Structure formats: C-alpha cells, structure tokens
Image (tube, rainbow over all chains, first blue to last red; front, side):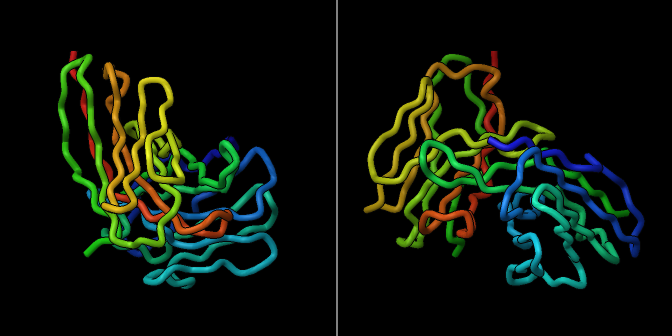
Length: 116
Length: 113
C-alpha cells in the first residue's frame, strides 16, 4: 500500500480565511481523492484529482470553495476557501491501490480543521 | 434514506468478547464491500474486503456479506483493547479506481479490560 502524508495535521483558523492542505504520496498514482469527515457523518468524497486535468467535484462541492491542484503524480493540494465554522472537519487525502487483486482506497492521516 | 446505514454506537464490550458490527445498504448495484478501521486521530486503514456473498476470514476477523438481504457484517473474535477504534463499512459498484466508495457513518467500538 502507498504511504500518504498530509500537512498540516491540524489547524485552527479564523472565519473568512483560507487554508491549503498538502498531500504527498510515496509512489506515483493516477488518481488522488479528497474526502471530508464531519462528526457523526460518513466520509464524503469532495473531488477526484487527476494529474494534468481539472479536478472532478461531487455534488454539493464547487471549485471556488475547494480549489484543488495536482501538479504531479505524487502530490496534491486542497484549499478550503473563505472558511466558516461549518467547514470544521477532518479532511483526508486518498489514493487507489490494489489489495489481493481488487482496487481499493488508502487514506492519509487526515487534517483536523477547526474554524472559529 | 441513506445508501448505507450503520449504527454509530458507541459499543462497549469486555476483553475476549465476540463483536458483531453491521451495515445495511439499499443499492443492489454495490458489489465490493470493505471494512476500514480508524483509530483516533488517524486515517482509515483497510481491514478487509469481500466481493461475493458469504464469509471471508482473516485471523480474528470475519467479514460476511448477504447480498439478498443487503446486509454486511464484521465479526471480531477474542476482542482486545487494541481493537478499540471506529469501524467503517464501505462499498462500491464495480472494479476500477475511479469508482467512488460509499461509506457508513462508522461504529465506535471500545474493548475494556
């Protein structure tokens, strides 16, 4: 499985500001995924990031709020823009891997964001 | 109705107990079923996956899928305090990295000495 790291691990931000989260993978991967995990709720996919093309956003998520960069096959960033307390959540980076012959997803440690 | 339903718990059991964790789903197109374990302040880690109906065993863990009832389970035998974590079920339609996973909300498990 891939080793995934994220920065920062946690942050406390003021309303109206923006935070950029970095995701680094130790091997080249085609697709990277960004998830949000809010208390008491399911992991929710925000977008899929492919290198060399624009990210594909899920319903309810827009590029202006969550711009994503994917400059190469091992790195991606997610920006949470114009933050409000409702954006307080854990943000997780994920990549696809193969386990026992089937595709699944592996996750980074997450970025715990608190917006005041 | 959510596509995947999972009791959030918390579930507290004594050490050595058999634990049963369950999810139900509504979309019959789901074919691949996974269980993730998430320790506090960590990302989810893949624990087990299954494709067809039936049982799959890995050490103290058994994953069970009943597609006719749209019901999946994870059994933990001889539970240990180190099993204390949140367990997330996840599922998707077909093979291929582009098919997104749909997760349950997770069940918080605490195994007490």
